[in-house]
Length: 88
Image (cartoon, rainbow, N blue to C red; front, side, top):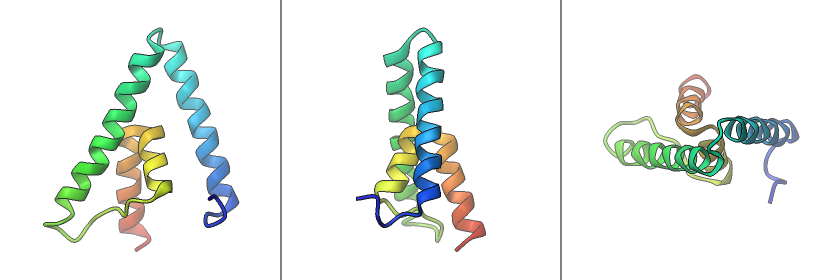
């Protein structure tokens, strides 16, 4: 499953996932903050998909983009959009 992605992207994704889990744990409301982050990330990815039908900028939905959206939430989706602009 991970063979299509470069190794450094996998390592960075797991490190960011660990940091997000530590941050959620320290907030005092682990499940609540984790679910809000996941819903926000997936919601923003879906919103970009809908808006992408009307403009030329969009993010392809695959395992890596969903993982970034779940892990980093809205800032992760914004990062994906910026990477899509800089590296088309």
